[in-house]
Image 1: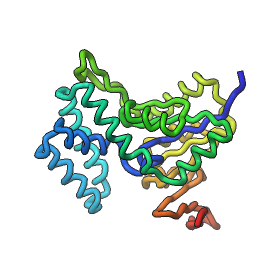
Image 2 (image 1 turned 45 degrees about the vertical axis):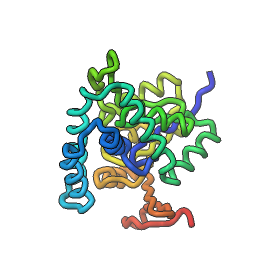
Image 3 (image 1 turned 120 degrees about the horizontal axis):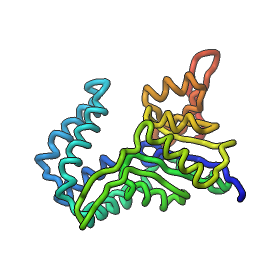
Length: 243
């Protein structure tokens, strides 16, 4: 069997410009599965994050979001859940970063195996992966029985990501030489460590610090400009990579 090099991507904030799980909450409110008054606390936490109220404001917002959706899931049937996923992907699938979108297209031309690993529900991740031609994907699994939510499988964060990546490498007998991993947060570090070339894309502070220590490639995309952080005599400076 011919071995192919692999490239693995996080999705939320790495390919898609927004967080699919967060968009899922907005959509469930619009579909009436979550009451607007219940969503008030989440919106308040979101504004605290946008206003940079504290260093932990994003984590606080995200936790309030997870708590709200977990509380709502038992009353959500499978059909509504799938409809919400379709709605989210249809809206956000083209709202992507040009760097990662173009990298995916370039790697496909080079016959790389493309994997997506994300903490978002697999119904969301799978639809994005299919749209962009990934070979396989992993997301958090939500189990339904008799059309009703039963439980949620292990979330694809932290240690779960490298574990699943190893499973995909073995499944496809992928070639690790020349492998590439792209992520944007500390939760992607274990996955990035497994690849020959790691790219910290729009990294959080934790990932940025780790990337600098490991001398990984650091890419920043803002508006229509892509920058690469390069080390010049111990100081990192921005260098543009496009016009």
